[in-house]
Image (cartoon, rainbow, N blue to C red; front, side, top):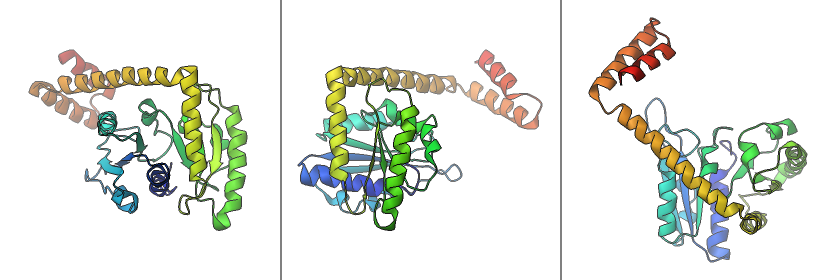
Length: 266
């Protein structure tokens, strides 16, 4: 979800439902955007989840994105495995949530939930390719008070819009719900939808197939990271890259020409 949609409030409400009402355990991996100017991150998500952070059956780990694209960190997959090994049967990943590019998390999770706001765009927003197309469930948050009617209208608009999207590989048709994370309303219904999705995809075999595809995607990412590190391992390559970078800035070489030259030298 976009900034301000209430991701942390929603996760706390959902996490409390899992631990308090269902007796389960939950781990939250919250990714905060890293400043491209200072290189720092606020890492304030845990402070927003005051009740969940003191729950003995919950674990919250804020992490900086450190320049990684896709709304997650380079080590999110490893963190998920560690949480599972530690006995947390539910792992929630909160992305940095800056727009429709936050799709890398879809390749490492079983279920993709998108939080939305009412009055944040007409129903045409619902047919844009990107994060909405990948979502297994769309939830209009802050459906309370004077905003309740607007949330109900937004739900109808998104329900109409997602009908134009192609069927997902899982054959699961995305649904649209409303909730008030602040008041804890309809959180139970949302978690039931997650359970419904798991039951449907396990019966069809897609759940295990998606898990295997995640492993393959993890391998591809590991290869890319290793190639990048190995490419710049030599001091001579780094020095040549710095020299070519200056030439590109000066306008004496095009970016493509400089890249090709560096690749030929390496």
